[in-house]
Image (cartoon, rainbow, N blue to C red):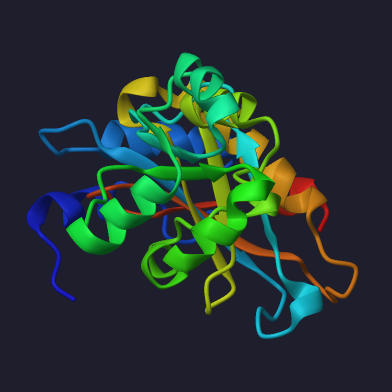
Length: 231
């Protein structure tokens, strides 16, 4: 893959053999971000597990202390007695079967997070083929299936992110914007990594955190030292 001059120059500014501490790595990500827009900063965590086995799945959700810097549009499926609470918490869309029809018949997808009360999952299940491939299907582990939909909306708006393994045993998560600066990004980074460490499956053998890399949308990846986590 051919990279542009800015990317190549940024890569030269890094020591290819070095594993950086998180604060230094994120400082480099911020200083080397050259795009004309506020780039998103992402964390890529390679784990020593095998996602093909059910007992080695790693999935959960965590609220980042400084949010993600992204405006999140929330769709809530709940019974009518919870409509007002969900709307008061900031949900853009609240409903039931009407939104199932809107999504299936009109192709409506103007939302980033879907939250459902447990008693609505029978209805939401009809959207599995649409929401599933997009990673939008409500899930109890992610906190998006909850009897307290108002609380779930508040957390989603505050910067709650979901983490899960892909087929390569890597977790990819946004932790904010370059404009946050290294200090706020490090707080978000530590919150995410600590959550992933706590989620270590009992069946995982050997080194759990194989590698961590941080990068901005258009920037070069910076490797982070994992030794202090001891897993």
